[in-house]
Image (tube, helix red, strand yellow):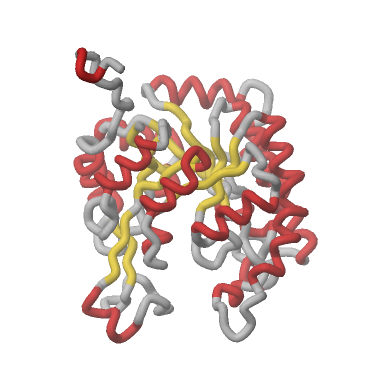
Length: 324
């Protein structure tokens, strides 16, 4: 495993400036936003002759590597919502939004191939965010299963063609939001080799799901990991519960994203389970902590995670008692 950094933490800065800023803290890999208009990396630019080689050379000059590209925004449009809720991503009709999301995600796979990057991270979306609730119509979520298979199988075929993996981020209010829906999604596309998951433990802690169990169940389908923590503010739970809406930065909110080590994720357990299933990727630090600055997070996350990262698997004992 390696210590990674999601450069979208500083989207107002050019990519090389972010790399220069984080390198002294010991970050080894980067995850770069690649949805349209992100300000750091545009896929159409990457695919111009010679441009990918320029980017790879620049990144390598800092002794870093590109671990993943992020298409979190555009990929949401593939299953929706396709109404006013996603106009901030792309304005158009439902058909235009689906087309935009699909083309952007496939182009990101092409860009990843050109950059020799193994993974693209994104969301499948879901048309009606209200389907998150199981009552009073418990069949709502399953109605999107056929849609997922129809829309994503051709996309995954393209990913396979380009030799790139698609890692869905398991997240509330998306088609894949827990362990059961993650397994079901694989089943719906006949266990397509290009489909796997980005594990962001903070996202599922919100639903009281143990990320270690997710790792043990999904095993080699964990393609990428976000280093993000979360806390359930116990003193607020009695008033707001776990489904509280509104500003997560409010003093009375029940749920807060935190930097690693400042929340409730048990990182030693999680890193152990990742090592046990053979995960060799990065822990990609994503900052959404409402309690501290991004630069606080840059330093504190590196200081916390670097001593915990397991570099290699156990070789086994070689003495006589353990020889067989």
